[in-house]
Image (tube, rainbow, N blue to C red):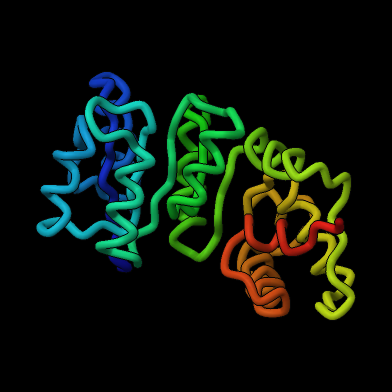
Length: 210
């Protein structure tokens, strides 16, 4: 049996924090090592519980979530951080991504989709709620994705890149194209290699025409 995905939650709302903890520990393949009400408390437990993923709220008492992401990525670059917040404004999104977050999901995300997004993050993806992905694209005022001429993307890879720009999860892309999730992952790895990027956000920005 593969090791479960290890997770630390940073969330000041006790009801939300406990709900996330119960969801994660009640789902096969996931384990919550710690659920912390503040960034300061989370940073104290990291040396003892080095997680695969951190679910990070933004509006926290004391140090906010974005500041905490910077601390985490400076000290432990391999840890993946997913923002899990009610904030869907452009400023917070880009501050989070610039700080080093590799995922951005809204708290209204259904539990099953949140678990899928966590798994996607661990597997090299950069999951975002659909609304967030659209805001990323709209902020740059680019009406369409245009792969660079030198990228040599195949027609299928361009199709998958288009779905990524709309915020689709790997499972959703697989369903739309009638292919396996592993095939989607293989295509996305090739897209990233050809575009010389590491995340969904970087791939979309790389393909924006001026």
